[in-house]
Length: 175
Image (cartoon, rainbow, N blue to C red; front, side, top):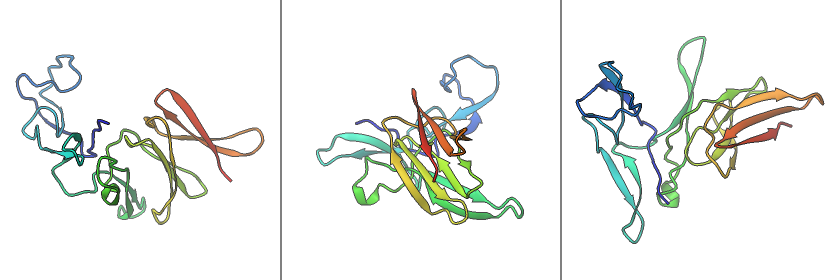
């Protein structure tokens, strides 16, 4: 299993000659996104994760975990209300997997106080308590959730939350 393990996967930097900054469109802009494993001065600052046989099964950024977090900010004060590690790193030993992981989408918050998010490369869809940040529920999917979730109320009055998981839509009903 080959994995890509880093939540801090990019920043903006001055372009370096000959670097492929992802878009490949030859943009004349002097700055673009760099990554821990892409062009720029930090290229290669990742450590291999090896299994018991010595085979490389992933990479980890050279910084202390967590490598992915979900943050709640108090809109009235600007203070951080809570933060929770977001994502797993399944290439690590079981007792160290709760290290966070990379992702590409944001959460949605319901009026009932639930925060739903997929947004990690480890195929989980999660619910958190919006007041405390406690993870309430996680469901393992066959695919990666790669878009912000959505919620809707059906004609029967029931509320649902849905997410796009690569090439399918998964829907869960709320109690």
